[in-house]
Length: 90
Picture 1 (cartoon, rainbow, N blue to C red):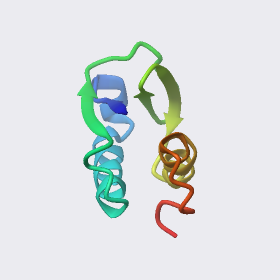
Picture 2 (cartoon, rainbow, N blue to C red):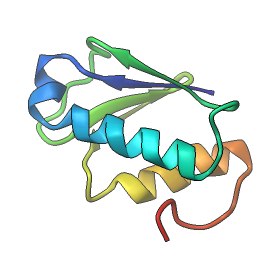
Picture 3 (tube, one colour):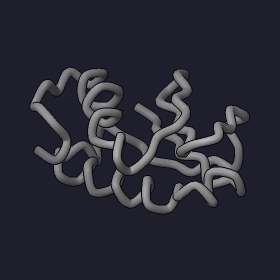
């Protein structure tokens, strides 16, 4: 699985650095380093008023915030990988 987090100017201003850190932590906590490739992207082209844009393989998600990160990770990373282990951070 390839996860690209937008770090372009718009998403940078909306906190992409924090989302990158949350994603790195969640990947490590679930021992997914061999299953998930994390990358940055300078613009995915789906700028939103709120939150950061993330592309998971071919699917693009907008509006990801630190408050919604756990749900996003559970639904779009863990479930796609078949890891139904519950919430990302309990």
